[in-house]
Image 1 (cartoon, rainbow, N blue to C red):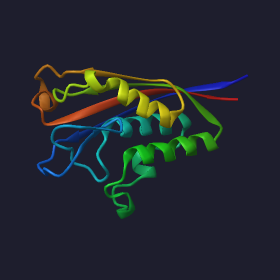
Image 2: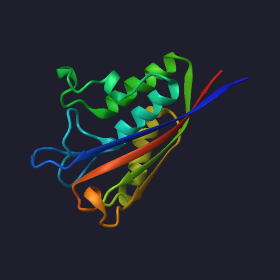
Image 3: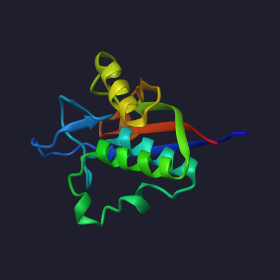
Length: 158
């Protein structure tokens, strides 16, 4: 008999003023201002990491990749996600699927949604869906101050 678990993750990053900083969402580089963060500040990948760790009972992204560790400065979040998938697999878990929601006003995700799903899915070894939602002008996200992401994952063991 198999064991299943569900995990959820959330992350948010503010836009930064550094013109050299790239905007990375789900491992895909977009046009536009980058986000503030210790790594590449990919909120989609970070939400996926937290969902995986939560479902497996392995803590959270801050435990695994603390922003006080200089070795993670500027890190590629897809690499961090791959490391997390390997750690979760070492505990006997297999990713069944991941579902992500990104809350943002800009950029438009629809033209590159497939690319994001393929990039994340190749790392997870499972189907990934990505959806975009607008904050409809409400709050910091609606004022275009940053981007938030949520993820839910289903893991199976046994």
